Structures are given as C-alpha cells and as structure tokens.
Length: 229
Length: 229
DNA sequence: GATAGCACATATGTCCGACATATGTACCGA
DNA sequence: TCGGTACATATGTCGGACATATGTGCTATC
Image 1 (cartoon, rainbow over the protein chains, first blue to last red):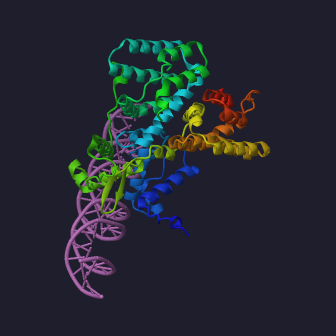
Image 2 (spheres, helix red, strand yellow):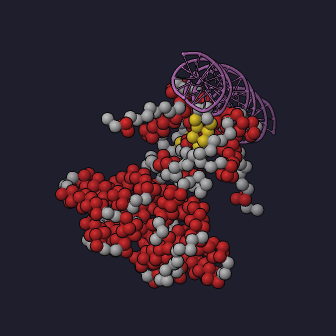
Image 3 (tube, chains in turn green, yellow, cyan, blue):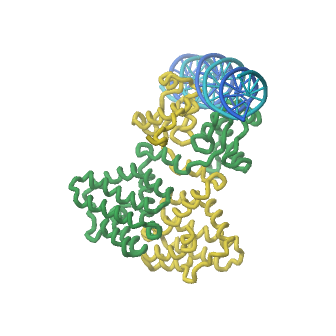
C-alpha cells in the first residue's frame, strides 16, 4: 500500500473538536436565526469540557457571524454575512499571487456576464452618470485621476446590477485590482489593440444595443487583461 | 441635526478590541506569511490584558486561517483561504432568501461570462466528457438522475475554466442551487421557452463556435431562471 | 566522531475559580 | 398605574495552575 494512504492522525485540539461538534449541532436544525442557544455552562457540561474551551469555540462563531452574544440573555444564532469573512482576509499582503490572479479573472468573467442584468435594471440616470465619468476621464490629463475614474466607471456598472452581493464582491476586490494595475502599468510588452472598445462604446451599446452586444464590447474592452491571464 | 447622526456608542468587548488591534498590527507589515508572531504572554503584556483574552482573539484568527499555532514554536502567520470562511456559512438554513437569490444570480452571470475562458482552455477530453453527460441525461427517465446530471454538466464547465477559485465558488453554491431548483420544480407558471438552448447546443457551440456565440446560447439556456430573478 | 537516548526549557493547550458587568424580572411604594 | 429598587442571571475578564508537545543540548556508548 502506498504511503499516501497512510493518513496523518487527526490531532485536533479540544477547541477544534468543540467547534466542529457545535457547528454540526447548530446545523442539525435545532435552532434558527433569532433563537437563543443554551448557556455556556450547560454546553460545557453537556460536552464534558471546561467553559473556557466552549467560550473559545463560541468566540470563533462570533467571528464568522453565526452567533451574537448579549449579556444576561445568552448567545443568539444570527444570519451570517457571507462576504464579511472573505473581506477580512482580502488583503494583498496576505494572499498569494495565484489566488489574486484567479480573483481578478473572476472579476473579468463577471463583468462580461453582467450584460443581461444591466439591460433589465438600468435607468436613464445610470447612463447619465456613466457619461459624466467618461467625460471627465477624457478631459483629464492626470494618469492617477484617469485611473480613479476608470475604476469608478466599472464600479458604477456593478452598482447598476442592483445585486448587493455582486457589488460588495467587486468592492472588496479593488485592493487586488490596484496590484494588478500596477503590474500592467510597468509592462511595456503589452499594447492595447487598436480596436479596443472604449467606455463610450460601452455606453452607446447600453443606450441602444443588446446584452449580447454589450458582452462582446466588454470582452474587447478587457481584452488587454484577458490576453495575459 | 437629525437623530440618525447620533451614532450609537461602540461598546466593543475587550476581545473585540484586541482582535482589531492585532489585525491592524499584522497588516502593518511587521510580518509576512511564514513568520512567527510574538508569544501570547508578551502580546498580553504589551496590550495590558490577560492572556485569556489574547488567546480568544488569536483563536478567531485561526478560524479565519490567518494564523496557525504550533506547540513550543509559537503562532505562525499563514496565507488565508479566501473562500474557506465563506464556505462555512454557506448553508441554506443560515442564509436569508434575498442573499441566496443574489448568489444564484451571480452564478448565472459567471456562467454566461465564462465563454472566452472556456475557449482558451478547453481540451478535446472536456468536450467528450460533456457529450457523455448529455448522452446519459437524454437516456435517463428518472427526474432526480437527470437533475444530478444537469448539475454535473454545469460543474464540468466550471472545471474547464481551470480557475480554482471559480470552481470552488460554484461548488459551495450547490446547496443553494438545490433550494432554488426545488422552488422552480413546484412552480407551474413557468414554462421553458421552445427555443431554449440545450446542453447539446452548448457543446456544439464549444466545438465549432465562438465565445460570443457560447454566451448567447448560455443566456438562452438559463433564460428560465434569469426571467424570474 | 557519530549517534541514540535522556533531561530540560519553553510555548501553546486546558481547566478552574473568582469577580465584573450588563440586563431582565419581580417586588414594592407613592 | 407607574417609577424605582433589589436581586438573579448569563456573559465578560482575569490570574494562576497544570498538561502536553517539541526544540535543544548534553551524555553515554559504540
């Protein structure tokens, strides 16, 4: 039998075990968001461990946003914030290059796939706002300012999606974009193609085009990044 | 001044404050992944709090995957798993309906936007695999089995993207899909349009079409969900 | 001189008991 | 009926003790 079959012995700490057991317990359906959990001492006794260890495990769930605690009331099961935890670790200093690349690529995919939603939900105000950004971008001769407006243009597209989860996802990726942008800014081997769709092209497509047309123009607009992924 | 300007006093617990302070400290750049942090007692002393409280805060970082601890070595800063934390709370019993709807919509966006990546990375084996799934799907007369194969078809498309982050993202959404699927299965007011693109159409497009064509067919294929979002 | 084996130092892991603090509740008096 | 007070209670914080694993260096043995 190959050595790979020899799985290492799981030596989880007490707190890890408690954490797993509690997660299981919560998800078995005994509680729903809003319910109060048994008190710490009772949990500790039921599990046959110290209150300290239980508290440490519960503390972890607080971080995940699965529970909240109130003095003299107890611990309450709450609705977690799915993106909140992701946000906390979304830091270029902590992530590796490959993960950042993948996140960036995911952003490109989303931006192209956004077409049909935008056409369903956009308002005349949105178009006007995009116009304004594109105008200022064209007039500006400061590189930093143009970059800021570029990000703002795309951020507004996300906002137009009306999907808060997508909007937040994009927002938390901004620090990553900065890194990738910097890398691209220093490369001289990449030249944007002459037919690259501009922000104005995208606006025009939104104004009197189709979702399919928008997707194609967006792919062209992002070509520059896509090609190097 | 409106009452909304009267922000509630932040009464964070000791552990919360320690957590914030440490997160700040870590991200200030004193450490990089692989480095060992100061020992618990030193941190406690530096912050002027008890070791218990410091341990509880550190325990939270373990949950986030920002640190790992080794006996007699210390606590080591590690690379967090961005999706890991999200995965833990991705449970239909914990999330609210609106968030699930948004996540589902995000999935539709990604699937449509995946076009250009698939064309860049797919292999003949991938096409073959898709064919096989589509075949079995067509031959099966069990609703559950067909549903399983449907999920598998789409899962393989994600796999073809070669982007682990996207793949994992899709995987963790599967429990959510089940819920949405169940809702749709019980609705009688939705009838798929006659022109809906099938899995075979998608395969054909991959075989001898274009990214733009794939996106359009995928939009048609998913129309059924899109229209109700 | 190389090495197996031992003792020791050290940092995390677990537990206990005590007290602080906030808050719900019951009681009481004007 | 209403307002205030005292009490009970569950979480929050702390200090200290001991358990346990692991790195390190000394030592005996060949």
